[in-house]
Image (cartoon, rainbow, N blue to C red):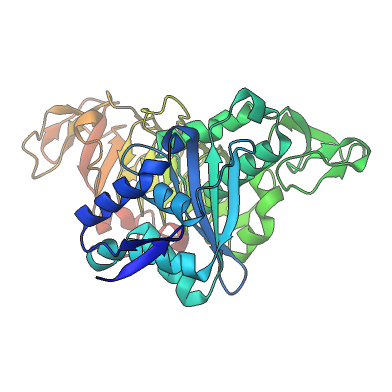
Length: 418
């Protein structure tokens, strides 16, 4: 039977997921308190161009296998005093981890840990492992711990390795607020410091107080001040007056117009146009190729952990002054008209041709999670639609079509693409 080594001990390569579970049970026997102490663990490697890529997990029930493997691979270190572990794995350690994940390589090659380790091996990239412990009172005043925890968590959110969809991840980043004092920021979101000496945790370039006007007071800089080169390389266009907070993932080729605000733990994919004064609140998740109109509001949620953020899929059109409340999941290729206010209890007049409830009122709750190819629009003038008699001012629901969307697709940036 093929063997592999972890912490100078030999183990049989698991042949199935049940074998993998048995392996975890075996190696975890000497890991007393590891699960209870850990808040997050991650792996980081770098592409040939120097850009990092990550895989990460918040320590929660059912997701401790990787944590135990990592802890065993690095020799069960005692880092309780520092509160964090940070080390680069050897080639042999990476090979051992891949051997342990053998069942997932055969059954699920897209498993995030398998995909990450395989990619790192193929690119010859060094693999950094980080483990962050829960904050004790002593650790909250430990500058090295606060710095490592804050930078690691915010970078993982910026990279999209952690997202606001995970309530425990939201809690972890929210807890970081309590570790740092308020600080003065320039209008661009860069830290201002007294005498030019920076005591900031994040990597925003510091300006001496007096060299720039005070533009705000916060615990963290803007995303642009810590990530501008990456945002530019990825083809994003962010006009002056946009405020994107640190701890937000922004993908490629997005356009942010005047006074857009994006709050912590939000996720924005690729090729989105977000028009002026739109508000993407905390933990809201946006996919790809969406057109978000002026003054649109996506409500936010950071806590409690079981609360659900707004989730927007791909190729949607959201009209000006529309509002989407927390817990709403919108799929793909939908049209939400200007001024529409959606919460789970919002009533819609069902005008879909093939619907069993055609002509009746339904709540958004009944559609939540299955919005695909639909239109929600206010009835401003039409007395009937699809043979359904309407009341002025109510919201009507019907199927989205290419003919309907054609009137809104003069701009290639908002065109629904197949």
